[in-house]
Length: 79
Image 1 (cartoon, helix red, strand yellow):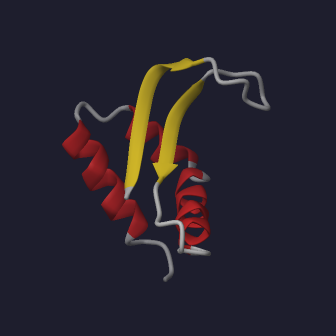
Image 2 (cartoon, helix red, strand yellow):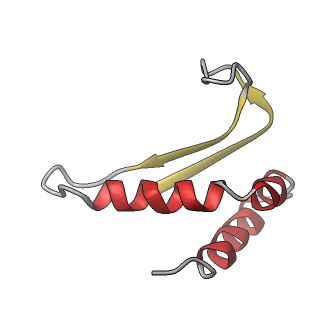
């Protein structure tokens, strides 16, 4: 299970660059899952390295649009 949060203005989150955080991701996995969360976080990291994708994600007007963008971008990544 995963959750994605978006904030156009950003929230103070003590980021390394000192800027407000605009994109939040949470991954929930069973306690017996040793590496599932690491694979999920690596994939999210790969997606969010793309500045154009981040811009489009933050510009999404509603949750469904953000979800569709996420699925489309994820389909471009290698398995």
